[in-house]
Structure formats: C-alpha cells, structure tokens
Length: 80
Image (cartoon, rainbow, N blue to C red; front, side, top):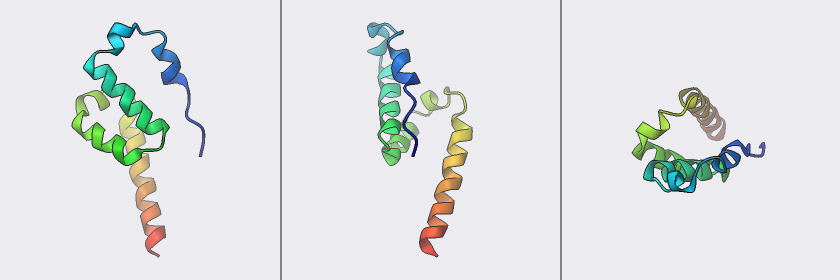
C-alpha cells in the first residue's frame, strides 16, 4: 500500500484557520483523516451523510467506482 499524499495537509496551511473552523471544512478534514488512516468504512459512512461535500470533490466518482470494483474482486476471491 502506498503512503498517502501530503497534498491535502499541505494545502491546509494556505487556508485561514477561521475558514477551517467552518462545519463543511471540518467534515472535509475528518473525511481526509479517515482515508489517510485506512478507515474506509467510516469514511463511506460519513461521506453518505455529507453527499453534497463529497460530490463537490473532483474525481470522486471515478475513485469510488475503482474501490467498488476492488471490493467486488476481493470478496469473490475471499469466498472461492
């Protein structure tokens, strides 16, 4: 497994703290943390509650489809 890219964390330094304290931004930070720490089921639970935030992120649909394909392949392999 590859190490997470630090791009999101580095970009946080460019955003004023008052903006980071807004509820939508806090949610985005939590979602990023879940992904970086491999807590994928928690990510998807939180993402489903905040679809408007997740859908605003470019490429999310493409990555979600890749994840679903991987999960399907893994579950097929695990049950064989």
